[in-house]
Structures are given as structure tokens and as C-alpha cells.
Length: 253
Image 1 (cartoon, rainbow, N blue to C red):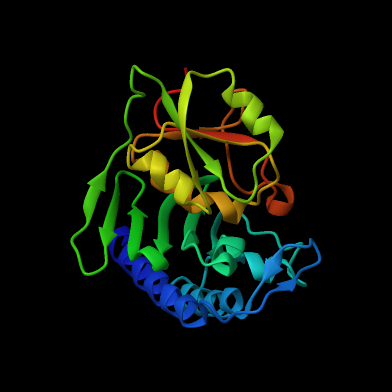
Image 2: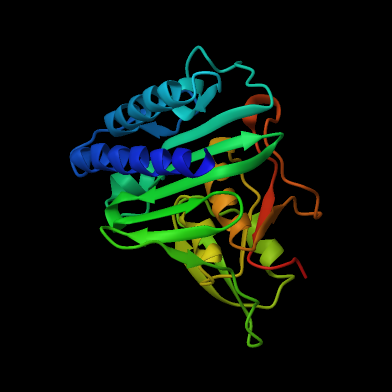
């Protein structure tokens, strides 16, 4: 069941990516109540994903970003639910740099059990069944991915392009970081999952749909996401608002 469902998730993420790319370069942004941008691409991709999930798993509630910006904002999901960010990295999408993703994750008992991250501008799909993670280039074969132990000459940090914050940068000062990779959206989790980076701190505000899919990919590849004090980073929190977190490619030092 999990394997066939994951195949369906990969398929809908690819189709949503195609919808997004149809709007690429011509989508106009509007501001939501929280002053974050939204485009027709976000809404069209979300409509496709939500309709597909409701058909595949009618008994599992869907919590999706644009849905939650409207009248569903107080929706309670229970212990098993989908988290969807149809276009993570809208600023990157509008900026034309390709660092945006489609995020779909299944949460069960507060943890991610299935996850897909699509990067349509790069022709990449990442997926996890909860036990292992893989990456596939367009029309290619899935390749298993694993995190790495930090190199002896220093750690590489993955840092946000659009949402850098002083607290995250201050946290890095406590670690032997010698290099940075700057990126957008949930691709930063994937950099760790592929063994290309070692740590990704985020002390600024995020929502659960921003992190769940990338978290699932990273965790099944051998990494972890924790609160800064090492506490478990769980889902189904009030309002689906995340606390600060640190994503690790290997066990925290």
C-alpha cells in the first residue's frame, strides 16, 4: 500500500510541477494577509494536489498552505493527515532562479511517514517511504541518497536565500562551519539528504507544510530535524506553526 501510494504521490507532484512551469515567467504575485506572496501557480498546483489526495485517501484530511490562508485556518486534522505546500519558495519562483519545490507529506502520530519533494525547474524528484530516500532526474532511474558524516576540515551549512535571520547565523558560530550553500525552499533539506551539506538552522517563522516533506526525505536518508535544544520536532502543533529548528545530516554534535 505504501509503495503504490508513494508512486501516486510522485505522479501528482510531477503533474503539479508541470502546472507550475506553465506559469513560470508570467505569474503575477498578490499578497496574502501575512504579507507573503501567492500566485495563480500556487493555487492551481494546490487544487490539483488536494483533489488527487482526496480521491486517493478520502479518509485522511488535507492541510494545504493556500487552503489554510482562508476559512479553513482553524481546521483540526487529528493524528493522520497530509501536509501540502504546492509551491514552496514562491519568491524564488517569481525571481526565476529555479529554487522552488512541490512538497507533499503524510503525517502519522506526529511524524512524517511518506514524503515527496519535486523541483520542477531542475527536473528532480525526491521521495521517501519512511525507511529510505531516493532522487530521480527526469526520465531517469531512482538513485538512493544518504547523508554524510561532516568532513574533518569543517561543516557545510545550507542557508536560506530569502529568509536569513540573525539567530540562525549566530547558531552557526557555535559549530565548525567552513562553507555555506545558499538555497531556497525545501531543497536545503535535500542538500543534507544527498550528503552535500551538514546542517541547516532556521530560527525564523515557518509552517508545518514548509518543512514536513523535506524533513521526511532527510530523516529517511539518515539525518534528523530537532528543536535547537535537541528536542523532538513533531507535527500537528497548534496552528501548524513550527518552532525554531535545526536540520542535521548526522547526529548533532
